[in-house]
Figure 1 (spheres, helix red, strand yellow):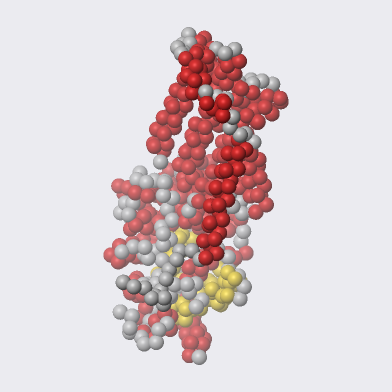
Figure 2 (tube, rainbow over the protein chains, first blue to last red):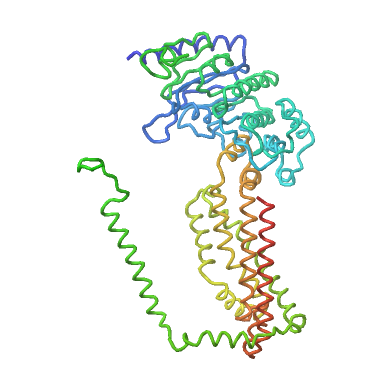
Length: 280
Length: 267
């Protein structure tokens, strides 16, 4: 089968390229080593995924629905436990961690969700402060007595995402785009080493999607946070990513810069016989 | 238009389903017939019921208003205290048990089942029966009434609370887990804001019910206005009975209004 040879060849080639580049110029922040995930025995959602992520830039993971993108990204912060394989974040292997050590690792990874996942009945500013829940002692959370430095940072970030006037609004009073801005700000509140985004624009209209992607790219660049984004929209991925990882049926089938992503790769990733039918 | 036999036909139920539904209806009718036979209405008593009713009302009129400040008022306040304290006690016990019963908080089946057993046990016993029990333990008075109200309410509050917690959406909780929040913080910031309206609504609703329930607890000696009602009835002091019934009626209406107003503001 042609797919098999493609699987074998492409990631190998790009991984070598990456490997050399990383060794010389760039620090690797996250390493995935032969990740496998089976929710049911014998049904692999992820098969032998190995990827390295440098400490800068935006990586887009593209692929059809149900191909394991969401699972992959949740395996990174252990919201989903991989069946086997390793996740290395800054010298720590996360799959072995439990309890307090796992929580300490998670607070170094920010995450943005498709459905925003804000606490709807809390104010916008308190949603931002929720990004500090891994750091702030419990009595301060209980009494809503957050450290002043956290509050100052929350207001600063709220201004940065353009919602300075919305601090005391309840999250459920916001529009989708505004909620996602809050979601991004909450993730950045963690001062993370890495930002994950799971289909952050899928519930938004095209214009707002571009605004959100722009904001995420820019804010990550300002704060020096690398970003990994699951996205099914190829045009957005090409426009905003510095590197694209294509997945199909739980495997990495493409890994390279956006301009190397050709129509035959997309056919490989998304399926279909004649390329060009749906590739805009 | 004429329909031929091969035209597509649609029926909501299959033949077996229709038979089963007919059987259910039949069983319901039989149950009604059976229970009417069982109640054994005595016609002689039924025939003069309206004259008895009129007679009773005549004897109640006019209500003995002087009796209100003398005795009824104090008993009424005691009734409200029993209801309020009983509800607070019940809620404080129902919260941990309700959380234990919620599968998304404690994902251990056996703990859930155990907590649900406690909740069912609490609900399966009527307040009056609980009161009889606690009068035997603590002696007659408001203490027995308060504990009885509390024990009956644990099941109600705990069950509804567990359901509200289980219905909480998982998204925000997942987000806070991703943030690295410890589990008490998940409860405080992930679940509590979502459950809060339901919690207050349940607690107020139960208080409303408890005001009514504690009004009858005195019949078995567990304090409150029921005690006064019981003795007035025993001495055939119908004008006093009227005063007491009116007082209970007004308090129940007031409780209803207060609860409705507060709930409106909460949600």
